[in-house]
Amino acid sequence: MPHPRAGLAVSDQVVAGAFVLMVLGIGGNVVAVRSVSSSGDIDPLWAGASRFIIAALLFAAVAAVIRSPLPRGRALFGATAYGALSIGGFFAFAYWGLQEAPAGPAAVVLATGPLLTFLFAIAHGQERFRWDGLAGAALVVAGTAVVFSAGASQGVPIPSLLAILASSACAAEGAVLVKLLPAVRPVQRNAIGMGVGAITLLALMPLFGESFELPSRASTWTAQIYLILIGTVGVFSIYLFLLNRWTASAVSYEFVLGPVAAIVLANWLLDEPITGRFLAGAVLVLAGVYLGAIRPRRIAEVRRVEPAS
Image 1 (spheres, rainbow, N blue to C red):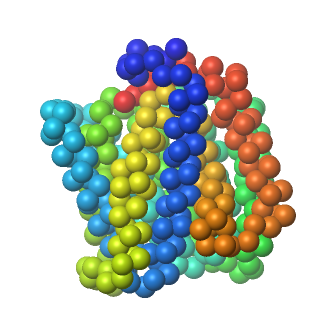
Image 2: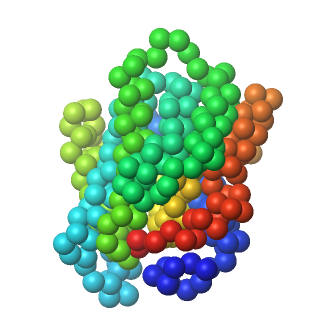
């Protein structure tokens, strides 16, 4: 049974279903962001900042309706750190790294997310070392390397890959801090966090020579609306719901299942081919996720972890 601070009891099936919905939402995010980026209709950092500004306002409106009090002290610091790391740091480093790093190598580096989260959680005394967690993360990295090996190329700039690694580390530490610092209601945490993340991206726009021009194409607006309502409000709400009930390292497997879901969605929506290499890598990824996050004994373990929001 979930810890009392988690609120009403929620079955394992509901929590697992929420995880699947989050992964599908992340996959849709990848397809939508690709559509926005390739259109050249709006600058990337401005697209992200505007998305988070609107989402922050929506969360703030909900918080006002339900009269959720503004957090203070360490709780406010935790919500701010969540925004600075999981949103501002992650997207800023990822954007910078993806300027030069091809998608294949970048995805493999991002696949270190579960391993980094696992290590950070151990360093903070939040989780115990487990060989199955380490083995699951290793399988995920290997499977992701197979999935994206066709897009890998030689001579990828090391600073770009380090930036991708930094983005993964930001998200990993942000997830651990959510569970480590005092509880904050999800609507307040997301309102504050997304506001902080948006400010971070806005501050970086001049460095990349970006403008505040709005998109002119209907397809770009459609993708942005999806990213705001489903990809941000929906996905981040489920993300905090899961962090309240699973360990940070278990939830972190979104790092690798999201891109796999994106390939499947791209095949369905854009007729992009699925290769035998993808299927082989996907088997390794799923095996790693099962071993590190969702096998029955691990579910029992993550239910016993103290939730933080």
